[in-house]
Amino acid sequence: MEDTKVVILCGGKGTRLHEETEYKPKPLVDIGNRPVLWHIMKIYSSYGFKNFVLCLGYKGEHIKKYFLDYDLMSSDFTIQYGPDGKKIEIHQDLVEKDWSITFVDTGAEAMTGARLKRVQKYVGGKTFLLTYGDGVANINVRKLYDFHRSHGKIGTVTGVRPSSRFGELIVNDDTVSEFSEKPQTKSGYINGGFFAFEPGIFDYVDDNDRCVLEKTPLERLSADGQLDIFRLHTFWHCMDTFRDKENLSKMWEENRADWKVW
Image (tube, rainbow, N blue to C red):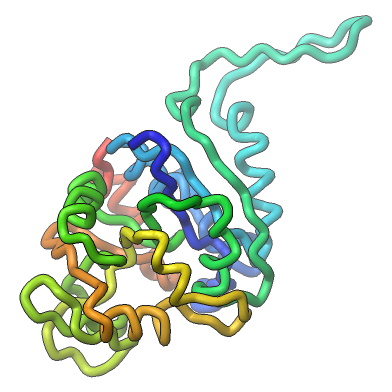
């Protein structure tokens, strides 16, 4: 399972969080003293999924720079200047030293389906996981992976039960019969953003910038009976607005971060 890829959609502009995203991409907005993207990656890595593919777009260079400087910015270190140049000694061993991260520029204006299509060559022909770069949850992603593998369909979406401003999942037994983006709530489950897919999903998305994963691709997938639901009844929260960011930061600072599974 070590080579299972985790695709994270990191390219959106985050306009509803403009207080922060005017200067940085949304996945780099901090919860506590770490970007929300780091929190998401820690959730996956705590269950053994440490091979990440980041779909970059808006201000993607900031995400590259964050990880290029990660060891220095996360550690105490000593710089020695001498005749042979500069030497840096890092004084801590990073817990994340076994992470593998592939950075892919998927376009400044691309929608989620196009971004996914553009990382196909990095995902390969195996089962992979996918999520957004702005949501955290107390989710056992290994159980999500195992559940997905057990039912033999192309996709699995995590269904959660917060407010009705997100895409709703119409469910019959464990199969999603309809994927409806932001309607009036009927069943109570919404798209929680933690997915598992077989490579067959790439037949449902295309390279057009306007291809939105949550629209035609997932609507078609559910109509074909190829999308199951993994029900999550524990903590879930997305960072959609500045108020969300403040709430999550307060939970972290007060040691109430229910998504902290590591």
